[in-house]
Image 1 (tube, rainbow, N blue to C red):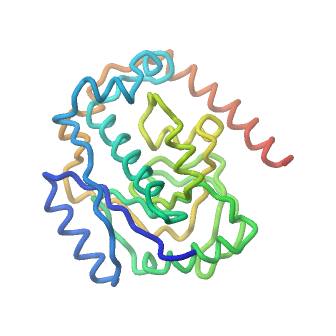
Image 2: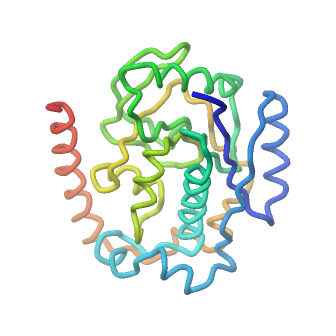
Length: 249
């Protein structure tokens, strides 16, 4: 694989975040491309309705997404499209409130090794420390890393690798009705299988106020308890069937 681009999603009004990441990138000797994020404070109703389904959200998710969450998903879609508009076969997607470990600089070589392994037909590879540990099984040793498969992919979308194939699959997910990181967990719906590369090389810094929460706090949204319970059961059974089918194939 040739040069692996790094796409950093950053709001125009969040210059302080950009400065922090830029400093980290320079320390690691890395270049990146900034992707101007969609701003949930100014996003139009027309743009929201073109990408997001209020109806499906009410039927399949336990609360209405905030404009910040909708804009976040749209920003990731913008980064995926940027990959497809390029000649690159894959890209690293980063959000801007992150801490990078020194091993992050070795991801280019690790990705090249994955391309030459039995797992070259990958879609998404998580790079970021999850909010909660997730059960996984090791698939292969990739240099100093372990390529793993999850029983249930971890939440969070602050750092991951995505292939052209994975980007096409995620972009076909329209309209969306869940947060972007939750949608990645429903792999049988998106068609994009999620792996992980351990040890994780990206972590949320938690040093800045959440851009999503700065628009509206998702915890203030009224919850649909019955929908949550129904979808948890749906996820459990469909996730179980999904992994059984993958084991057979």
